[in-house]
Image 1: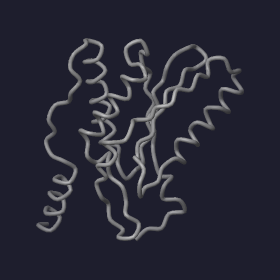
Image 2: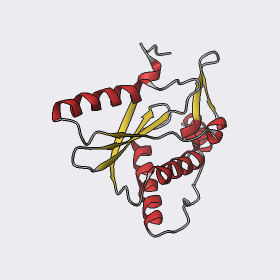
Image 3: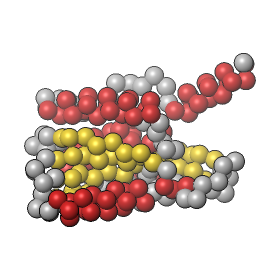
Length: 173
């Protein structure tokens, strides 16, 4: 069993440039909800008493929160400082035992370009999963731009089914 100084703080982020006229705040909230509903691993939490992961489907009933930070009027120095604060705030906001382990915000930069920042705790995502999520986000944004129904293709297996399969294979070898 590995001990971490702060187990809530191990995470990674992706930053996407977005067309805010298509993907406004409500649209991004809708995309975030679809991702969380579709990818059960994004609803994982960790029970610190039993030391076990569990699905927390309460996250499906929570309002999706995406903050907009308008940094377009800040000087270069203040912009850099504010970005550090925002990153720290996002990385520090996780509670592995109870919170949604996905945090997100939108930044409007000094050139009035919008960026969607998504931060994931490592309990819910890995390098391979990031690519799957990016593909799903791209698919949803494309559908949104074409005013199509926002849905994702059916998945091949849930995270639970996949982990059970891996565990069975490990015992075979």
